[in-house]
Image (cartoon, rainbow over all chains, first blue to last red; front, side, top):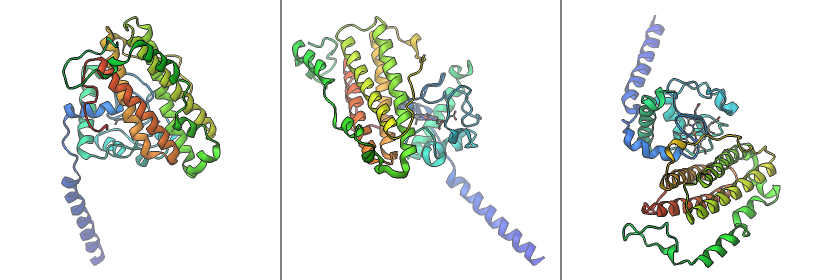
Length: 135
Length: 199
């Protein structure tokens, strides 16, 4: 019984820690207008509507990593088990090669948290717009 | 005289306007003969390139992605050149820049082979936003966007190469593409170098 209570206490302590970590780890609020400028860094390889050197960005949110039909992904990306959303994108874009070792996206990443948030807000905005919904 | 350089404000002087046609022709004609230091480094023996050790496979992947983007740039300038929208001397400029991208692609492909990799081939068909390309300015803006993106892409590649010789070579290509970007902006009448840093 004592053990059980200790376990519960420990568990709730962990829970409290995690809960407290919540706000601190929360993603910065993104501004899509600023994100559009950050996205210019991606334009050598990506477009929203069609595949280029990198895969299309329309349909990104909720998509399994490495799953656009007909795009030649690396094995690393196809087997990464990621589903793209705000958090996974934040992690990947911070350091692509660390998040998906072996990815063909040989890009150092975007270190600035606010820039990432802005970029992701822009990706989301275009994904919700006619440009992508017509796809 | 470079008639495409439109002086829209006094913050950027049309320096290249001083080049006469003769100088320009000989410059364009001879540039292809020079092999840059980076190209020499890349074409060096496998031993020099193998200094990166373990990182070889990763470096090949990064080079191949860069090669794919360079090949697309070659195709994009081809589209521009064949569009009928570019007037001389902008047309010559586009062909010169296309030539640089061909040289980049060539060196990247050779390096990939040297590292034991398989270089990607150029695609049979590229998708370009042709609906938005209706004038010379549209084509210039499109090219400028690609060149700026290429600078960012190489900037993102420089720190992740395992082999510092490759990082140096990528930086050398980056410098060339940054110049393309500035000249294209200038041709558009925009401030050619809008900031002190690239990102």
